[in-house]
Length: 343
Image (cartoon, rainbow, N blue to C red; front, side):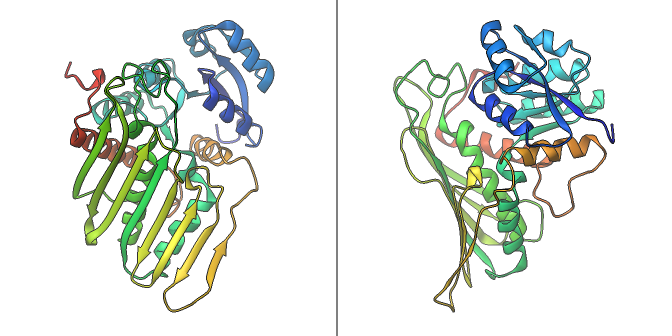
């Protein structure tokens, strides 16, 4: 597959799938071959809009298409594991939206099947592949901040009040921690690790509080504090009921590094040094669609080009670490899902 064009199938045709399809047009070596939805009319409209050669009214039909090399899974969270396993058993490579699964146990099961089938399985964390976050990591690793002491990170937005929406329905995997808390958590693990000369780090302590909606019974907003090796502390906030600025700020003994709009890699990086009055500004990379970088990284792995030793990328052991910490965060506020029941 070294020089082969990667033919993608998109499984589910919601908003995030549309964003991914747009990015495929900006990712050389990848094409949108097919799309599948549970409503054939929506699948046809999606295929026509994004130039897919084929469309299907059920997911299994897409997986039966022998010309599909890789599948992008864009279903609601509770269906991720089911369709990861179906896709792997159908011989497809899989890129699945975050969070990869509902919990660590499910992620390990998916990993086991991927390994047995000899197929690539990766979690789609777009920002984790973008040159903008690579620049942040490189600055931290360079020692420009000195010893890293604290990290502040947040992802907040207002999902409205429709109790039937996937964001507010417990049965559909709703809640802030799984949907958006996974971003600041992954960033904190990434930065805390690079501050210690490693790819990422796992929390030694995690304490959290959160508000569970009376009707929704999912977390509407929550804050966690973590301690990593080297006494690097992190404060993480997520919310699906408040329109707050999403941030990533890193504080060290010699200055502060901040990044605006970190989860879509669209903001400036600002470096403030304690000894200087001026602020050094790094403009965002606008060379291509911001989702194209993760598509190219996945395709490169399929072609035998592993993630570089210092590249941010999204390795599977990183996914497992994030799932483990997400389980911990949820347990702190008493939030469980059907998928957490031992079977």
